[in-house]
Image 1 (cartoon, rainbow over the protein chains, first blue to last red):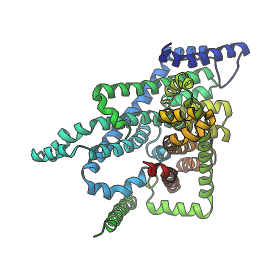
Image 2 (image 1 turned 90 degrees about the horizontal axis):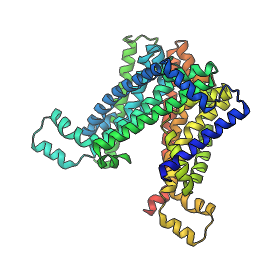
Image 3 (image 1 turned 90 degrees about the vertical axis):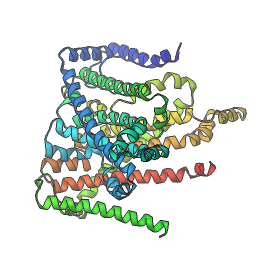
Image 4 (image 1 turned 180 degrees about the horizontal axis):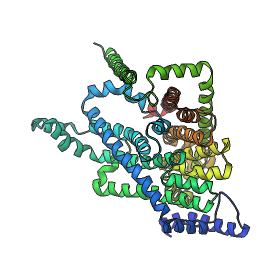
Length: 253
Length: 257
């Protein structure tokens, strides 16, 4: 048996055992449902498109926040990486804001922006800025000094220096930061929806729970897991395709 | 100028920059560029923070949040290291169990909250379960990874000394995996803090999360900002404390290398 097949043994066994147990005991529960009913509920949620609409809302907020956070984090990270003076001057400010848990901003975003996409996007963006900032700053600093000498020798103006030398050289490690942030974006988006925002997958799973639909709730849970897994795999594959082995060296950073 | 003096000078300049941002915030608030309903000046936020501390309100909220966070994190640490050690120290478990865990890892852990509410209701037990469940992943996976990455020759030594499996775990694998485990525990502190806040918001449990939500609902923006500042300080202090503990505990390894 190959390793891949061995990996599937445990989940399949758990699912089968759970199904058998639920059938044998005629399970009636607000929190558990047999896998077959979960699958049916998931199919039902697909058929009436409700889960697809929720997925769209969650991913829209997550990706919009990720895009904004990445742009801000990248701009700051590159600036801090190039200008050491700026980096040292901003150190206290950055270290004072960074440890605020993103979810603590939720009430502020709530009274300032109300429910909906905007407040969620703002919170996701805040959460995504920091990993990108820290890792892109480190990436820019670790650029081979000779590349910078080349840029000087060619007398590239600052904008071209960033665009032609710094970003390409730091890109593999920046992409690792982006991958991390994409995971964070999804987590934060779902968390905001579960905590308070009445849109998306998080709100969907909360509604299912409040309606005591254990099958639908667990169907949402499974679907959220699949999306998280697919996002992660997609980005890992993209990283390998785009940067090959170079990217792996940035992973430990 | 000596090196130390230069560092202090930069530090001072950096604090001055941060102070000027706060002054800017004060100016924006004073000129009412943003409605004071949303944005209190730092003076009002500070006053609210001081008032909350002097009448004991904020102390009890802070204690509530710290309690949720620390209990959940401790449970996660103990369980995470134990389970990680069991899985990591056995080749069989690593091939059969570890892939399932890797599959579950990207799941946004907050999605488990509705399930926990359905099982346990809006209770402290629910919060403890959710925080522990969320915080266990980085620790458990780091332990498995650390165990798998132990220098194989150390295991050979253990075999030739005929050490028992427990002895191998405690004398060889755990010390050798401790950098990974501590790094996982540091990640988990942040997760535990975030999940504590979320659980307090959802279940109305006594703590800073509940406090900031109530303040927002009542449009008491000064209290809200005071709560957020306190959460920021909590995040900062815990992560600094973890780094210091990590440094202290791993000093023997740095000396070895």
